[in-house]
Image (cartoon, rainbow, N blue to C red):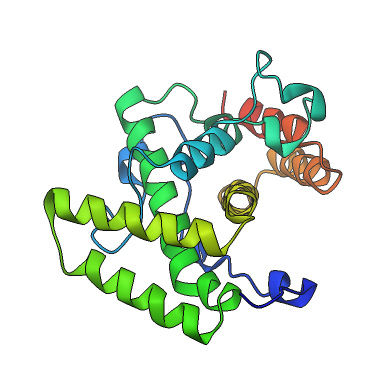
Length: 220
Protein backbone atom coordinates (compact mmCIF):
# COMPACT_ATOMS: atom_id res chain seq x y z
CA UNK A 1 0.00 0.00 0.00
CA UNK A 2 1.24 3.53 -0.76
CA UNK A 3 2.48 5.65 2.13
CA UNK A 4 -0.09 8.30 3.03
CA UNK A 5 0.76 11.97 3.40
CA UNK A 6 -0.89 14.75 5.35
CA UNK A 7 -2.17 16.10 2.06
CA UNK A 8 -3.96 12.81 1.39
CA UNK A 9 -5.75 13.03 4.71
CA UNK A 10 -6.79 16.64 4.05
CA UNK A 11 -8.44 15.48 0.81
CA UNK A 12 -10.76 13.03 2.56
CA UNK A 13 -14.26 14.13 1.61
CA UNK A 14 -17.09 15.16 3.93
CA UNK A 15 -19.57 15.35 1.07
CA UNK A 16 -21.97 13.09 2.95
CA UNK A 17 -23.46 16.08 4.76
CA UNK A 18 -23.68 18.52 1.88
CA UNK A 19 -27.46 18.11 1.45
CA UNK A 20 -28.34 17.06 5.00
CA UNK A 21 -30.72 19.04 7.21
CA UNK A 22 -30.66 17.76 10.81
CA UNK A 23 -33.82 17.40 12.89
CA UNK A 24 -34.78 20.51 14.86
CA UNK A 25 -36.98 18.88 17.49
CA UNK A 26 -37.57 15.50 19.09
CA UNK A 27 -40.48 14.43 16.90
CA UNK A 28 -39.15 14.60 13.36
CA UNK A 29 -36.31 12.08 13.36
CA UNK A 30 -38.44 10.05 10.95
CA UNK A 31 -38.21 12.91 8.45
CA UNK A 32 -34.41 12.90 8.23
CA UNK A 33 -33.62 12.98 4.49
CA UNK A 34 -31.13 10.13 4.44
CA UNK A 35 -31.26 7.19 2.03
CA UNK A 36 -32.86 4.10 3.58
CA UNK A 37 -31.24 1.83 1.00
CA UNK A 38 -28.03 0.11 2.07
CA UNK A 39 -27.61 -2.23 -0.92
CA UNK A 40 -24.49 -0.41 -2.03
CA UNK A 41 -23.18 0.36 1.45
CA UNK A 42 -20.73 -1.71 3.44
CA UNK A 43 -22.37 -2.04 6.84
CA UNK A 44 -22.92 -5.24 8.81
CA UNK A 45 -24.29 -5.52 12.33
CA UNK A 46 -21.46 -7.88 13.25
CA UNK A 47 -18.70 -5.60 12.07
CA UNK A 48 -16.48 -4.04 14.75
CA UNK A 49 -16.04 -0.85 12.74
CA UNK A 50 -19.79 -0.24 12.74
CA UNK A 51 -20.04 -0.71 16.49
CA UNK A 52 -17.15 1.68 17.09
CA UNK A 53 -18.66 4.27 14.76
CA UNK A 54 -21.93 4.07 16.69
CA UNK A 55 -20.04 4.50 19.96
CA UNK A 56 -18.36 7.59 18.52
CA UNK A 57 -21.68 9.06 17.43
CA UNK A 58 -23.28 8.33 20.80
CA UNK A 59 -20.34 9.79 22.71
CA UNK A 60 -18.17 8.56 25.57
CA UNK A 61 -20.12 8.29 28.81
CA UNK A 62 -18.84 8.69 32.35
CA UNK A 63 -18.47 4.93 32.82
CA UNK A 64 -16.13 4.49 29.88
CA UNK A 65 -12.44 3.84 30.49
CA UNK A 66 -11.72 6.30 27.67
CA UNK A 67 -13.50 9.16 29.44
CA UNK A 68 -10.30 10.22 31.18
CA UNK A 69 -8.73 11.12 27.84
CA UNK A 70 -11.33 13.82 27.18
CA UNK A 71 -13.13 16.62 28.97
CA UNK A 72 -16.90 16.85 29.10
CA UNK A 73 -16.67 19.66 26.52
CA UNK A 74 -14.84 17.62 23.88
CA UNK A 75 -16.83 16.47 20.87
CA UNK A 76 -15.80 12.88 21.57
CA UNK A 77 -17.93 12.85 24.73
CA UNK A 78 -21.04 14.38 23.16
CA UNK A 79 -24.07 12.33 22.18
CA UNK A 80 -25.26 13.11 18.64
CA UNK A 81 -28.88 13.38 19.83
CA UNK A 82 -27.91 15.88 22.53
CA UNK A 83 -26.00 17.90 19.94
CA UNK A 84 -29.05 17.97 17.67
CA UNK A 85 -31.51 18.65 20.48
CA UNK A 86 -33.50 15.46 19.94
CA UNK A 87 -32.67 13.39 23.03
CA UNK A 88 -36.35 12.70 23.70
CA UNK A 89 -36.96 11.16 20.28
CA UNK A 90 -38.42 7.70 19.86
CA UNK A 91 -35.78 5.02 20.55
CA UNK A 92 -36.60 3.09 17.40
CA UNK A 93 -36.26 6.18 15.25
CA UNK A 94 -33.02 7.12 16.98
CA UNK A 95 -31.57 3.68 16.28
CA UNK A 96 -32.64 3.95 12.64
CA UNK A 97 -31.04 7.39 12.49
CA UNK A 98 -27.73 6.00 13.81
CA UNK A 99 -27.86 3.18 11.26
CA UNK A 100 -28.41 5.69 8.47
CA UNK A 101 -25.51 7.86 9.61
CA UNK A 102 -23.22 4.83 9.65
CA UNK A 103 -24.40 3.90 6.17
CA UNK A 104 -23.60 7.40 4.97
CA UNK A 105 -20.11 7.33 6.53
CA UNK A 106 -19.25 3.94 5.03
CA UNK A 107 -20.66 4.87 1.63
CA UNK A 108 -18.60 8.05 1.58
CA UNK A 109 -15.51 6.14 2.67
CA UNK A 110 -15.89 3.57 -0.11
CA UNK A 111 -16.69 6.19 -2.74
CA UNK A 112 -14.15 8.87 -1.89
CA UNK A 113 -11.47 7.71 0.55
CA UNK A 114 -10.48 4.21 -0.53
CA UNK A 115 -8.91 5.43 -3.76
CA UNK A 116 -6.63 7.71 -1.73
CA UNK A 117 -5.50 4.91 0.54
CA UNK A 118 -4.87 2.04 -1.89
CA UNK A 119 -2.52 1.70 -4.82
CA UNK A 120 -3.66 0.69 -8.31
CA UNK A 121 -3.23 -3.04 -7.78
CA UNK A 122 -5.06 -2.91 -4.47
CA UNK A 123 -7.87 -0.88 -6.02
CA UNK A 124 -8.32 -3.60 -8.64
CA UNK A 125 -8.71 -6.15 -5.86
CA UNK A 126 -11.04 -3.83 -3.97
CA UNK A 127 -13.30 -3.42 -7.01
CA UNK A 128 -13.48 -7.20 -7.38
CA UNK A 129 -14.63 -7.56 -3.76
CA UNK A 130 -17.07 -4.67 -4.16
CA UNK A 131 -18.58 -6.17 -7.33
CA UNK A 132 -19.23 -9.39 -5.43
CA UNK A 133 -21.05 -7.43 -2.73
CA UNK A 134 -23.17 -5.60 -5.29
CA UNK A 135 -24.04 -8.73 -7.27
CA UNK A 136 -25.24 -10.88 -4.37
CA UNK A 137 -28.15 -10.73 -1.94
CA UNK A 138 -29.20 -12.05 1.45
CA UNK A 139 -26.76 -14.11 3.51
CA UNK A 140 -24.33 -14.36 0.62
CA UNK A 141 -24.11 -10.59 0.42
CA UNK A 142 -23.42 -10.36 4.15
CA UNK A 143 -20.58 -12.83 3.69
CA UNK A 144 -19.15 -10.82 0.80
CA UNK A 145 -19.40 -7.65 2.90
CA UNK A 146 -17.44 -9.33 5.68
CA UNK A 147 -14.80 -10.40 3.16
CA UNK A 148 -14.49 -6.85 1.90
CA UNK A 149 -14.09 -5.52 5.43
CA UNK A 150 -11.35 -8.05 6.16
CA UNK A 151 -9.61 -7.09 2.92
CA UNK A 152 -9.64 -3.40 3.84
CA UNK A 153 -8.48 -4.04 7.40
CA UNK A 154 -5.41 -5.88 6.09
CA UNK A 155 -4.43 -3.06 3.75
CA UNK A 156 -5.39 -0.08 5.95
CA UNK A 157 -3.98 -0.63 9.46
CA UNK A 158 -5.49 2.62 10.72
CA UNK A 159 -8.94 1.92 9.27
CA UNK A 160 -10.55 2.13 12.70
CA UNK A 161 -9.00 5.54 13.40
CA UNK A 162 -10.10 6.82 10.00
CA UNK A 163 -13.70 5.72 10.51
CA UNK A 164 -13.82 7.17 14.02
CA UNK A 165 -12.46 10.46 12.71
CA UNK A 166 -15.10 10.50 9.98
CA UNK A 167 -17.79 9.93 12.61
CA UNK A 168 -16.48 12.87 14.63
CA UNK A 169 -16.37 15.03 11.51
CA UNK A 170 -19.97 14.09 10.79
CA UNK A 171 -21.04 15.08 14.32
CA UNK A 172 -19.35 18.46 13.91
CA UNK A 173 -20.79 19.06 10.44
CA UNK A 174 -24.32 18.16 11.54
CA UNK A 175 -24.02 20.60 14.43
CA UNK A 176 -22.87 23.34 12.07
CA UNK A 177 -25.91 22.58 9.91
CA UNK A 178 -28.11 22.90 13.00
CA UNK A 179 -26.62 26.30 13.83
CA UNK A 180 -27.07 27.54 10.27
CA UNK A 181 -30.67 26.31 10.20
CA UNK A 182 -31.48 28.00 13.50
CA UNK A 183 -29.84 31.24 12.36
CA UNK A 184 -32.16 31.26 9.37
CA UNK A 185 -35.23 30.34 11.43
CA UNK A 186 -34.59 32.98 14.11
CA UNK A 187 -33.20 35.62 11.73
CA UNK A 188 -35.69 38.27 12.88
CA UNK A 189 -35.50 37.44 16.61
CA UNK A 190 -32.54 39.28 18.11
CA UNK A 191 -32.53 37.57 21.51
CA UNK A 192 -32.52 34.05 20.12
CA UNK A 193 -30.02 35.00 17.42
CA UNK A 194 -27.64 36.28 20.07
CA UNK A 195 -27.85 32.92 21.87
CA UNK A 196 -27.16 31.08 18.62
CA UNK A 197 -24.11 33.25 18.00
CA UNK A 198 -22.94 32.48 21.53
CA UNK A 199 -23.35 28.76 20.83
CA UNK A 200 -21.36 29.15 17.65
CA UNK A 201 -18.54 30.83 19.58
CA UNK A 202 -18.55 27.96 22.09
CA UNK A 203 -18.21 25.61 19.14
CA UNK A 204 -15.25 27.57 17.76
CA UNK A 205 -13.66 27.27 21.22
CA UNK A 206 -14.23 23.48 21.17
CA UNK A 207 -16.76 23.74 23.98
CA UNK A 208 -19.25 21.41 22.34
CA UNK A 209 -21.32 20.67 25.43
CA UNK A 210 -21.82 24.37 26.17
CA UNK A 211 -22.63 25.00 22.51
CA UNK A 212 -25.29 22.29 22.38
CA UNK A 213 -26.74 23.24 25.77
CA UNK A 214 -27.12 26.83 24.62
CA UNK A 215 -29.02 25.80 21.49
CA UNK A 216 -31.17 23.31 23.39
CA UNK A 217 -32.33 25.99 25.83
CA UNK A 218 -33.64 28.04 22.90
CA UNK A 219 -35.96 25.18 21.94
CA UNK A 220 -37.28 24.64 25.48
